[in-house]
Figure 1 (cartoon, helix red, strand yellow):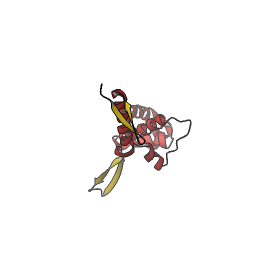
Figure 2 (figure 1 turned 180 degrees about the vertical axis):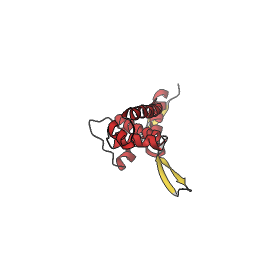
Figure 3 (figure 1 turned 90 degrees about the vertical axis):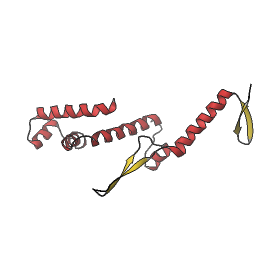
Figure 4 (figure 1 turned 135 degrees about the vertical axis):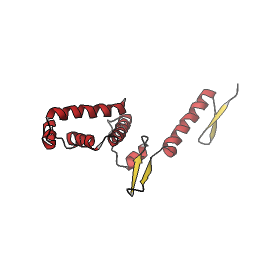
Length: 145
């Protein structure tokens, strides 16, 4: 049986092959989270003369804290990361909607207008707004499946 060693402090400790593999797998995961994780990319549009930062769906805890994320003691880190990932998916889905669909979602969810208020602004029936709303939500749901 061959012995494996891991360095703990200044001492070499003999361990089984299984512990050795798991230790280095965890070590590699830690290096990935600290150094290798993607933070996003830059998209340059020469025609519109714009430069946009597009965040990655992956993010590190340190980067989230630097950006001002508040981690409450009661809130699980997994929940926070899931919320952030959900928001990134939603942003991506919203970008794929046409202008009218985006306006409808913004009116209903960001401006907190009612269906009747949107219908009145657009001079259409509230039933038409409800149908358009359902169609847009069905389109957005595909991103979360």
